[in-house]
Length: 336
Ligand SMILES: NC(=O)c1ccc[n+]([C@@H]2O[C@H](COP(=O)([O-])OP(=O)(O)OC[C@H]3O[C@@H](n4cnc5c(N)ncnc54)[C@H](O)[C@@H]3O)[C@@H](O)[C@H]2O)c1
Image 1 (tube, rainbow, N blue to C red):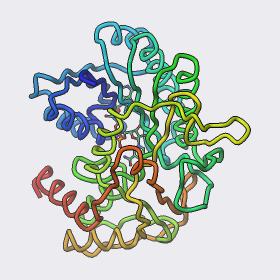
Image 2: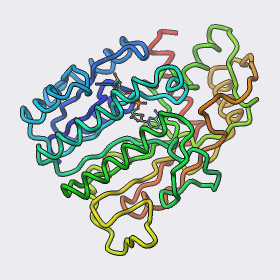
Image 3: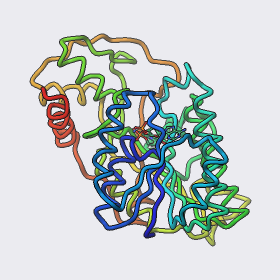
């Protein structure tokens, strides 16, 4: 896997992954349209860290542009593709549903077609813990059924897994979907809790705590996500010879298709996460307790047995270490 296309390379996870692949001496083409879902300056600053490396090229257009996407796959010969570009965010999918269809569905078909015609050896794509939707059996396992999403965002991610399956079946394209669990860390996303809380606490403003604080998340540090993705890229899925249509395993297939959870395998209470942040910042948060938000789920918790077995990796970083690194980055980046 020498030449890799990363979509969403100016995003939180894409930037960290691109950096790592460049350090390994791989050639990376980063597609990102730098849209303004959140501060594009943060995306430009992430990108600036990548463009200094001659092994990196940035291409700037919308993944939903079918003709331009087809051209990209003729311009370059990609060994691997990591699709991270998406309209992310659960709550925003109630406000602007069409943007999820444009990028996560239309854009994703363009990726699949590119892989089909471009002879790509492995497509890795971001799914999400949100596909577990209304499931309450913990920890969440890839071998559980995930047919009950509670937001359009989650449905679009589940749709990606299904769409990928058809391409693995029809065209024998190896595909791996990665269900990331609440990712946090330096260069993080301004629409996510840690960023929102930090900004508000420094400004002396209250933080919004949903479901009256009764939330649990499997918070996963960015470096652990990157390590998992890097290992998966080189681990091309093979058909599961034991898969049977009369008792179909949702996590594997008779064709080269897999899904993995990448989570810390640790269920943390949201109030503990806030406490750790308070300690790192040395500021006590003013807390605004609110009811549960539509589209959200009260708890997530990843079973990572398959990841450990197949790629020999389990995320390790504690929230005490990870939140401290985020706070250090935040202070340096915003010169506080
Ligand atoms: N961060 C998390 O906690 C988390 C959890 C589960 C899943 N995911 C998934 O992981 C992936 C990466 O997430 P992230 O947190 O880095 O998000 P991000 O929003 O920081 O990164 C996505 C990048 O894709 C780009 N992009 C979006 N639509 C595009 C389009 N139509 N054409 C070209 N570029 C486009 C954006 O400009 C952005 O830079 C996403 O697919 C997301 O759904 C993230």
